[in-house]
Amino acid sequence: MDWQALRLSLELAFVTTLLLMPVSLVCGRTLAFGRFRGRRLVEALVLLPLVMPPTVLGFYLLAGFAPSSSLGSLWQAMFGGTLAFSFPGLVLASLIVNLPFAIQPAQRAFEAIPRDVREAARCCGMSAMRALVRVEWPLAWPGIMTGLVMSFAHTLGEFGVVLMVGGNIPGETRTMAIAIYDRTQAMNHEAAAVMATMLMAISILTIVTALLFSNRIGRPHG
Image (cartoon, rainbow, N blue to C red; front, side, top):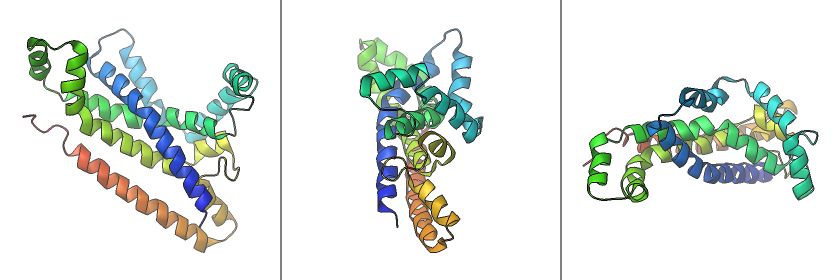
């Protein structure tokens, strides 16, 4: 069992999920209620990681993180290290890959809030911010949590983009998915099976959690 790889995978999943929380709140609500030019294009860009092959997405991210790129050179000037083949690079790549998993459920949850509930909040004299915090966010919370849980599970099992952007550096970028691949390539099927079982158990737990939250979406709000 590669405990170092498991720790790194869990750390990557936790950090990614934590950073995606405000993104899903803001973007999910904006796409649900906003009516602005280019909205469909924004929705398409959010969904793009779902249909783009991981190696293709990983290639473009690797090119964007390279020291010769604007982002890569800026990162190197600010922090003195490279963005590619580093843990911060993995986090940024994971954020981009998991955008649809986090934003789409949040958007659908906001859209499920009855219009008369939002209008009643305004009629009660609530400011837009107070209505958002006291009414909309609590009602949309099951969908938001569903997206975050699914993002957590997807980050744990991501392989293609992680390998392209982070490589296979022990303690830095080697996640459980990559460790399983290494053990399989080395014909160490017993170790690979143990780690695969561990990931499967965590994935089942997260899926059950996501289903518990998603079952609450769309129920009549009392």
